[in-house]
Length: 558
Image (cartoon, rainbow, N blue to C red; front, side, top):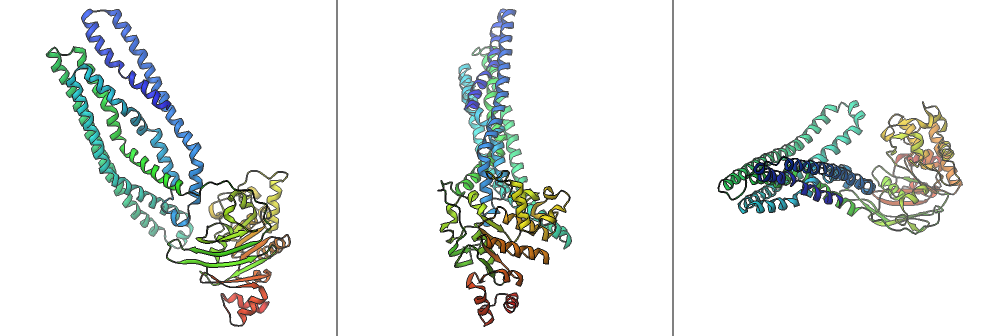
């Protein structure tokens, strides 16, 4: 509202040069009054100084609008981006880029054009006061430029939509390939990936070229029309002055006024690309925020003890054409260590993701002490769950920050550093961390770059054990561990069981299966067997479900 208010004063002051010219030609030149010229000049300079001040303040206000928008909306946009599921991430991989585009449109030239354009009728009205013919010329020119803007919009719409889609796909592809740069180098895939990215850039380049050429054409045409109309106003003013219908000052005033009336319209055409990109960004953000999980007031539930119940869990594949998990139901008590076994692709990882609350089931529910996971706000539920995903999920930052889940503060009466060290010791990784260049303050890259796979897995295990959660969901936690690391993992599971935590562990090796007191057999997205370990192993040895060869070895050992 202040931008609009300042724009009102600014556009009124833009009349000052025209009024000055009228007075100079009609009063000073006819009377020769130098004092009048001095006073008029002082008033003009003062008006232009105020105009410059208002223009500067308007730009500062627009910048402040962008900053305020960032402060109010960026947290929601970031949360929405993090909540996007995998099947939606491709189309929304650059939500923040869309937000920055919208912010640029709101605080840049498109905003200036938008607040100045409504004042064009004022200048056209003043042209009518000078002479009806000059007003008619200004009105005709304004309508012509508006028509040109509409044609420009229709011509550029398709190209800008294609450009936006191609841009999102290309940047998502580039990010994906960059994250696998080491694999690409080792397998000699770099040239092939560069060629693939160049093919993706071709469609982006073509769309950008089409949009750029169209915008350049219409900008040039608009400039031509504006200059032609401004010159026509000057010529028409001269014609009317010769016929004694307006004064000599009216000639210059008409030229200045028509130029000022056409300026915001020309700016709109020139900034139409930003207008359209901002409009598309607004539509995208609106859709993303509309589909974001609704904020609700959660009832504060008591701390859970670790009674885990799965009720008819059903999860579809991202493509929606098949089920990854179908009708999974079971119950685990505090102190249970449940080993989940089965062939690759059976649905074990999907089951663990649902148990940890990483994905929401399409049907059914996961309950902790009888309450659905969705009845907890994620920030309050997270400390009670220790989740170790198959891909580890370490973040760029220090080892300390990763173990502490990037929580900057400790709970009342707790020592954050002590809790971090306790978790590392429980995972058997404390000594390993102390041997690193900066100990717990050693920086690691995305996905654990900078440490070995085994070290990354043990750091991720320490993060899962941080603050003694009541539910552990560990997906192949020993995949990269050596014998010492596996022994530390088994000890950590036994300690968690002793304090009453419930652990669900996807396991392929006999060592972890031997620690479990219950086994679950998963095959083709269904739970085929669940119960005490010895009972399930006996069923397997008697010719029941045989998920993996390692299970037979474990059964023989048992």
